[in-house]
Length: 444
Image (cartoon, rainbow, N blue to C red):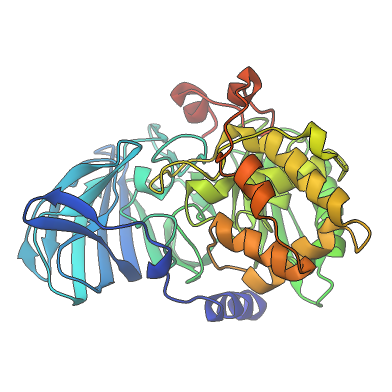
C-alpha cells in the first residue's frame, strides 16, 4: 500500500492546470458564453440499491473559472437535480460545432472558484440480479461521448483532476468485488472508497463491479526496472495463467523500450473482446493484450488532449503490433487525422493504418540517428501524464532531430494538401472492434 500511495503521489506531482488545452469558449446565445473550466477536485458517492434496482450518484465538483460565463461540463444522462454554490440551478445540452455535445450550467458565473453538486442515476452497463449487481464504466475513443460522462459528471479529456469515489451496495449480504485503477480501501463489506490520481482524465478510469468469485482471478507482482513491486491482477473466464504470463512478458518488453511501468498497478480483464485501454488497466482479448498494454504508455501515459491527438497513440501501438517496420514516403497517404474540428472528441480510424505507416516513415527518415523508439521514449518521459495536442508532438520530434517536418505533417496529418479517401479507414479494427450495447452489456 505504501508503494501504491508513493506511485500516485509521483503521478500527481506531474500535473498542472490544463485550461490552455481547452477548446474555445462557446457562443450559447447573444448574451451568454459557455466557458470551459478547470476541475480541481471531485467526490462522487454511488449507491447501488438491490431492492430498488437503482444506482444513484451524488457528485460534488470544485472548479475554477477564469472568465465570466456559464460553466461547461459533461454528463450524458439528464441530471436529477443540480445546484451551484448552494443555490438550485439547471443544466442544458449544447452542440460543439456540430461534432459533439456537452452540458453547461444555466447560470452565468464570475471568475473564481465555485462548487457544483449534481445528482444523477446510472443506467448504462448495469445488470441487476436477485441479490447482486454488476456495473462497469466501459469506454471507447472511437464513438462520441463514450468516456466517463456516460456515468458520472466530468470535464472533457483535456482536464486532469483529483477524483474520489465512494461505492455502496445496500440490500444484500452477497459479497462483491470492485476492480478499479485507483487506491482502493474497503470500508466495510460492499463499501469502498477509491482515490484516483490527479493526473487522471475522463478517459482514465477503469471500473468494474461484480459478484465476488463470479470471474476467476489471479494476482502476482511485477518487479519494475526501477525496483517497485507492481501488483498485477488478471481476471477472466478463460485461462488466468495464460493472461498473467503474457501480461508479465509484455510489461517487461515495454519497460525495455520505454522505461518503468508508469502506473501503480496493472488490471487485465480477459473478456475475449471489447479491447479498450485505461490507466494501468484494460479489457481485452488475448490477441489484443500487447496493443492495449502499449496504451498504458501512449494514450494513458502521455495523453491526447482531444480527438485530433488521438491518432498518435493508436499509430504507435499499431506500429509496435507490426514489429516496428520502416516505410518509405511513397507508402504514405494524405489524411486529416489531426485536421478535424478542434471540438472533436474521437480518434480518426485512419490512425491504425495510415497513422502507423507515418510513424514507420519517421522511423525510416531518422534511423541513421537512432530508432524512432528512442524519440518515443524521450517524449514519454518528458510528457508523462500531460495531455498534448498534435502540434506539440510535431514540435517535440522537430526539436529532438533538429529539423522541420511542416511539409510532412501538413500533407499526411493535417489534410492541408487534400485527402486520400479509403474504405479501409472505416473498417473495424481488430483491437478496437465496435461492440453493440448488448455486447458491452454481456461483458459485465
